[in-house]
Length: 361
Ligand SMILES: [Zn+2]
Image (cartoon, rainbow, N blue to C red; front, side, top):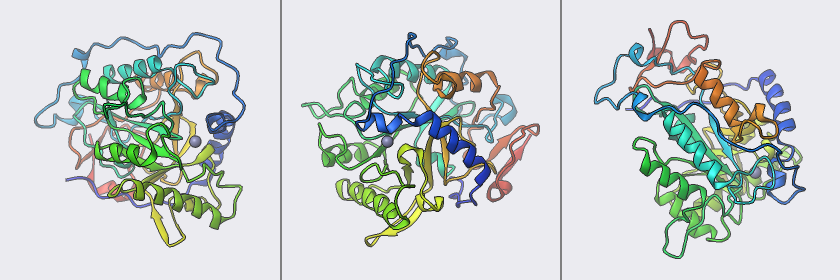
């Protein structure tokens, strides 16, 4: 049994203001770039994901029964990296693009370091069911480009597209689940065709999230127009892939509508939407979904980037180092989805609705 679904908590404006500023600074070129704006300068240094070479044998085993939380240093109030990808292409044009080899190297680093991918929906609802000692990571993709997902003539994912690479890495690393959330716009995955692509993704367990119909800046339009963009984006998904439930949305440019709560709840044109999480563009690890600091209206993400890329302090190589070293407390599972275990010394506090399941040790 899973923990019960998280209800939205009140917006914490001061934190979001800071985050929004970081977001604006860090992402001025993000989606604009990938949707046809001027490309930013190329990073000058060689890119690697860096990091210690952990051997798989150093990781905890998959126990039939959960071990004691202390024995695996469980901390389910620790932070979760929600990684954000845009284009995965052989000729990157800016800091939001990654080469297929860089993408593969980052997934292999995550597998070595004991991460298990979960979808954005699983994260935001607290349905994180992974083995004891492992860490959740959320892989998210914005803008529904062909480099993220394309089907070949044989009906299988192109081995060089992001989903093809993810499936291959998961095959080679048992326990590294091929879970991901793809935030799509209208005309998603044009090389394959929207309907065909979304049906395949849904049928194979990938989460399809909403990125609005036209990649609209939701702050620049009236509230009704913002809701129309979200509702129409949702309708595109549910009509293309019958049975798909839309639970998550990514804010174009990381910009929230006004009021911000419209990003997870609203209606337009006879279509209602109610989401478990809306995702920003920057700029650091996200709180545990069980922590009081969790806010579904604006969930931070980390841009995939090497240690020498532009604005590396907002990037994944930097934040994965911080999480590994303990400079930022990392979510470590106790292996039991019904308990929320954490050391008594943890500074994060459990959210009210999870307190009865909290197991400090
Ligand atoms: Zn975008």
